[in-house]
Length: 268
Ligand code: 1SD
Ligand code: ZN
Picture (cartoon, rainbow, N blue to C red):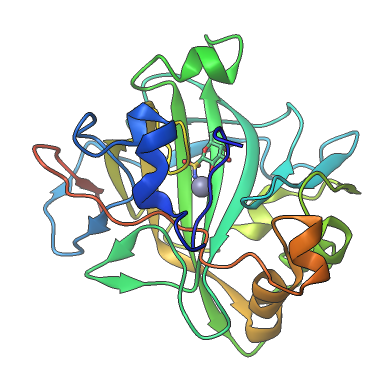
């Protein structure tokens, strides 16, 4: 249908999103995401580490892993929030999700000095004064998305396994499965969480609303080749794609110019 979108199909890719979603049109909207980040940029000493509340606890209830046809999302309940680090308010954590490439091609959305990482994880947080995400999308700082690059090594990442082991249960759009809560901190880089990039941008998916304070951490999360392969081979957009063994790959949006925006780096 016309309100759907895709990534790398013939005649259907992010360059065409603007036909159905006006805000995605590059000429109507000058604050798009993702962008390339430059690691030589000037550091801003007022940007200290973010405060991650509830990330070291095991939340009650259960979380839900879901395939929405465009990516895999983990909905994480209501016990966590992020603040500080120059964010204009307290933001409640809603979900995290992933962008990836193919078996031999990288698929992060942001790049650093022109380098694309294998994957990117987005932790989506909504400013607590808003009743729902659609209200937050009308506020230029309504969402705070924390982005983490994912790089590949030989060893499995045990915590990441909580998600990657469940991917076969959410093979195509609309499928969901329960995940037992675990401390989200265990997924994040173990050190240098004070080093990040900051800029104002948009959702990287339709409707491409310019409502996001982006924080991109410099230190990546490490997973194994086989964990990466689970994303590039086990997730399908539709049930039909699953039958034809055409996995969902390259679910990242193309890069955009920064134009007049300031991109900052936190203090070291
Ligand atoms: O792709 C996500 C989309 O699924 C949704 O979570 C939205 C915010 O609610 O954010 C985009 S993204 O900009 O974080 N990629
Ligand atoms: Zn995303």
